[in-house]
Length: 271
Image 1 (tube, rainbow, N blue to C red):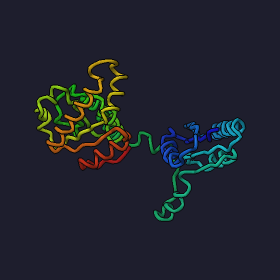
Image 2: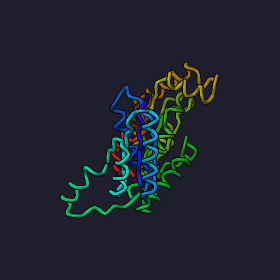
Image 3: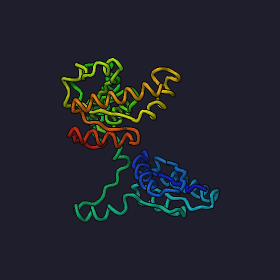
Image 4: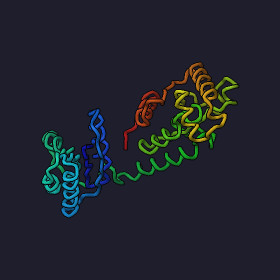
């Protein structure tokens, strides 16, 4: 029987879920059913959340776990009455920070993921639009790009660019190395002028074949022979050109993004 995890917040629940998921991954062999309850910002909603927690406990016979990021202490007290193991994400830090800063906490709901800074929010939207318009080399003008991901088709360039744009507000473009590019054996001219912005992504050929087979089944594009040739040739080209290279086979989008930004010396905060 899986243990039920509730991520409860007075805002979107993104912080609670991110922290909670990171914690739960440390416990291998334990199955979890994860449920998010956002916007618990009054007593009625808190009591409704308590009812859901108690129902889950009755159904499973196991004590639920609650990851709580509600800033109103009176609402947190209601959640604590559920009988669940309630882990308050903010509680251990508020007191020490108040003493260190000499300022009392001023609870504000949704501040972490709200529209606090409109200029930063607009930058994220503009960066996302840039990533979409420069996806797979659709727009070859990379002059305004802050980074350009290069690799064979389906190696993870597009989702990484979108993640970087949405979470960091960075203008990320990507260019797919086509069989024609690989046969020429040199960096495409449109990329040569932006060498300092380039970062290569590669992938295990067997995994690439699986991804391509789902996209274009039984095509030459998805054969293992084509995948092996493209990956080997692309890796050889990028290494010869001195372009940093990362395998995405067993790497999450978040980790890929962090490694790319660190390698290129781009230091922007996560929104």
